[in-house]
Image (cartoon, rainbow, N blue to C red; front, top):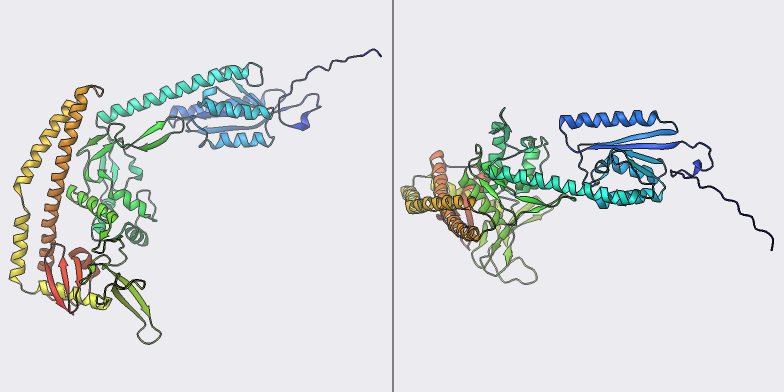
Length: 526
């Protein structure tokens, strides 16, 4: 056999993803730098500017390097990469072959999430792109780079977890001290004084009050949002376009009564920052009278009851549930005297001089598949006439009706309930003090917590009775005010009055039974 000759070709380490550089004697590396600060404090902003300047000069002054770009995220957390736009742009540029080497200050600046860190490092290594961490003096292209990187990244993640825990404890301490934090720039109705305390913004407070009162008058969240948008009234963010979700959020926010519920949600994963609703897993803190109220407490509670009522819908005698629909002032107010079901609105378009005619029909009677009721149909014009007649009947001198309103108000007042509520409040205060002085993990804490929950339930049930009592008084007072304010007969239909004063209209064969919000009723002949 011929003598074999072997020639060793020495290895030439190459860093970079550009195939055009292969074969060049002195290839220039396209180098990028990445820097990040995680908060928006002034000293951190200074650090941000310093890092950008440092890496720009460092790369430009290095022989054999070409500066691609300094990628910098300002005020973004490092626990995940979803919101780091510059970081993601840098990775994209690497994948299309624009970068050969990345320089960054430390692993914690690159990523505090071990999984993310290793995932991106390996992704870059597949493209032959290295990352150099200055502080740890680690080059990912070295043999020992990934071992060291795994260790250092784990430590960085533990540091992030420790920091997250410290933040949690800090928030918990603030909650226990009753300190309330609110971003007033997005919070309709309030601003802050020089000392940082919440104070009412009078102009915005008018909008908040309007939302609450219109909701109780029967308007839906969608209708209120449309009305505010049409009138160009700004919301908490300063925009004039409202969504029904904006209205719903305002209606359920306890801060409008001067109170504050703290820790409504909590973070379950410090890496993903995912938050979930707190349903008893973490303690909550309810601060009463923390700041000036815009909405009275009894009005707020009435709104919460109305929200529940609308979600529940109306169950009619046939067993079906009719969902809340409030397109007009008559929606969910007109009922059939025969079967008890609700009436719905139907518009008929005619080609002759009649044009469009709107009628209200019993849903059961209008079911073409199974007609089981023959309740009398009524036109919308007739419904308006019935309401106008009912209003005029209580406006005219009617001593018996006025006296009945006064009796209703006197009957609704119950001093015993007020005294019992005071006693339960004192008991809750006593139990609250005991809870504060007990360890959350002790047996006595569990016992006191159960007693507190039982007493709170009794107080809530009594409050419901008190709210119903106050609502009954208010309905009679509103009717009394309406009568006092109108000495002359009405000659024009007012949708607002129907929403505010009329609870139910039952259609019979020859008359309508009109029930007012306070429970009193009148018969109006058809």
